Image (tube, rainbow, N blue to C red):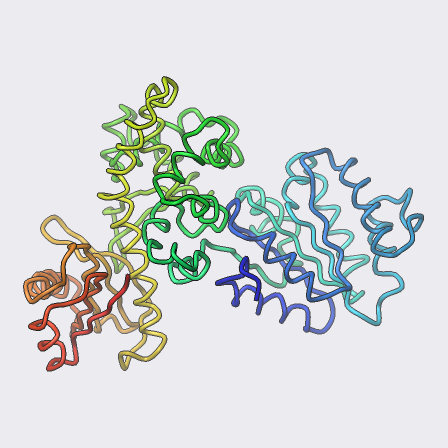
Amino acid sequence: MPEALVGRRKEMLILENQFRSEGSSLVAVTGRRHSGKTALLTYFASRHPNTLYFPAREEPSSRNLVYFRRAAGEFLNDPSAAADADWNRTFRALVGERRSQKVVVIIDDFDRIGRKDPSFPPLVRYIWDTVLRNSRTMLVLSGSSFAEMDRQVTDYDAPLFAAMTAHIDVRPLAYEACRELLGGEKAGNALEYYAAAGGTPLFLKRLAMHPSVSDGIAEELLAPGGSLCREPMEALRAEVADPGVYVSVMTSIATGHRRLLDISEDLGIPQTGLTSYLANLVSAGIAEREVPVPGGGKKGRYCLSDPLSEIWFGCVNPNLALLETGRRSALAAIISNKLKNDAVPRAYRRACTERLWEMSSSGVWDFALTEAGGWWDREAEIGVCGYDASGRNLVAGDCSLRGRPKGLQDLEELTAASERMARQVRAGAVFWVLFSPDGFDRELEARAASDPRIRLVSLE
């Protein structure tokens, strides 16, 4: 499997199942910018020669039609087949003589056309109903704007929702997939790369081109003309028309104001005036609201979904004077501090949460987790924990980074916090997992060997 498709087996399985299904299918593919949608779709196209792959342009629908007609002519080996056709007749030409075999039509960045021409998605629905539905066609529509894809395809009221047979959300790569993607020497520093780039393949590859993460940030994010220097703002502009207040909200979150009250006090904006901005950032996949499991209530904490945006809005935007006056070394020191004290611990918690799900799936316990995340109250916090469907079985995990082998004291601290949590949520049985990149001392290993409720996981 090509390197670009590391960690995408589930997505490929959905696409292959849709291709093998009887009749026609319409698949929506969504995901943040640079999440790997195009790599996924072009790889899928390479496996099925009877595929037309069409990348939509940031141009009016009339110009995209010109390009689409040209692509259809090349696909049919007949440049005149759709030379003067509209969208409807072009699709008819594509599938008209190929009903005996399934035709795949992929429109990448489909949302670009509908953004400029709101009549386009209803037109595609009409073409689906009158041309494609009964023609053994697989139509794949991808887009990076969550708001636009919702409006055009994936929302219940969208023109194409009722025609959709599958929806693939291409999420950032999991930690272990990132280690595999980095490979070689870089895999040894995978956690730091993961902390800076998240699971976005393009960002990982850009940073990995340099000897270290700090060098990659300096050259790709901070240097004039760096490949990533415009990315955080471009991602925001793709979702909102006026980014002004959103920039302030994102900067507040990334500088450590995680609760609604804290953001409100930091910006001097009433909480009621912030809720719509925060809701829009969450729905666009730009921010996340984490709540303690189970339930959560009003204890939510916000963070930016993309670690690179956390660095930009948490370090660069508040210190633009350092960047613009050429004092990049001072700015690099601020970023290094954020990576060490915030981004790396946060990335390790994500990696441990992913491993917790894997442990559950592999049958480590005689029950299956149905919910996982963090838990906290005013006096205690557990980095990662999970529940089964009954709510009576609780798995509590220590995913702190100590810089040393973990020992009995770490287990005792986890046990005390989990007992407090268990009382509050009325869990009947508690199990413990200690994650560490630095191993465990002999006393803790001996305790774990004698108590089946304790698991020790080396996760580097």
